[in-house]
Length: 149
Length: 147
Image (cartoon, rainbow over all chains, first blue to last red; front, side, top):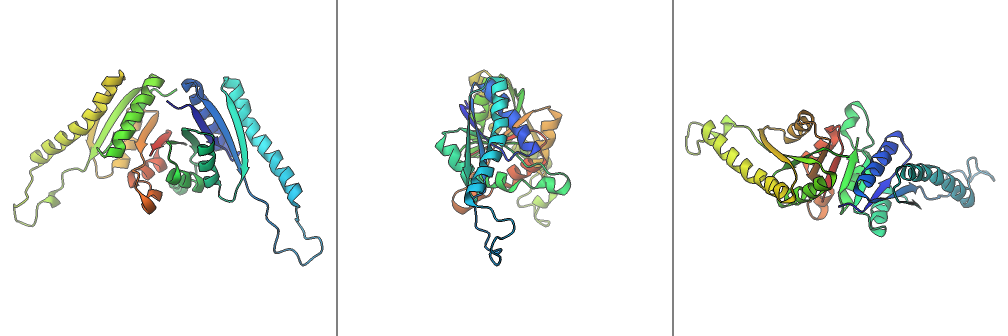
C-alpha cells in the first residue's frame, strides 16, 4: 500500500527511532525509504559588522561545507539502517528556512506516499505539544503521516 | 510489523476513507483491525427544565446510540470482511473520545492508531480535528493521520 516512505530526520534521538520504524515498515511493505534532512540557509550576520572580521562570521562556502558534513552524517545513519534491513533507500538533503515546507515539497517531488516522523516527544506537560514541524507537516500534508512517539 | 490496528470512526466521509486505507494496510501487514465508535454518554441536561417535550429516557438514548454505533461500525466490519481481515468492533460512551481512543488502544493492545485528520478546507485545513490532535498528544503508540 505504501511504496515510498519519506522519513525526515533532524538527528535527534527520537527521530532516529522514527527512522528505525520507517525502515522496518518499509521492509514489511516492500517499500523504499527516502531520507530527508533539512538544514538552515546561510544568512549574513547582520549584527556583527562593526568590526572588520566579525566574531562567529562564517562565509557561505564554509557554511555550505559544514551543512554538507552534518547532512552526510545524519543521512548516513538512515542509509545504514536501510542497508542493514535490505531496504532500498535514497537520501536527500535540502536547505530551507521552513523545514515543514521542505518536507512537503520533498514528499511531492519524490512521490512519497507516507511520511514517518517523530512527534518530538517531550515529557510532562509539553508532551501534550507536538513538535512545531510535525504539527505543520500534519497541517499541510496531502498524504498520510505517521507520528511516532 | 503491526498486529492490531485501532480505527476510531465518527462516521464522517473522511473517517470512512481512513477505514478503507486502514483495512488495506491491515491486510498487507496481516494485522487485525479494532473498530471503535465513541458516543457521548446519556446526559440529564437533555431534559429541558420540567418540560418533557424532548424527553429521552436513558433506555431510548442507549438504543439510539447503539443503532448509530452499529451503523458506523458496520462500515468497518464490511470493509474488513471484504478484504479478509480479522476485525473486532466496539462502541463506548464517553465525553472525551480521545481519552477513550487512547484507553481502548491500551486495553486492546493495539500497536497503531489509524485515524482521519478531520480534513477541513481552506484556512481551517491547518487545524487538526480536536480529537486527532489530542490522540496524537497522548498516544504512546504510533498514529497514522490520513487526509
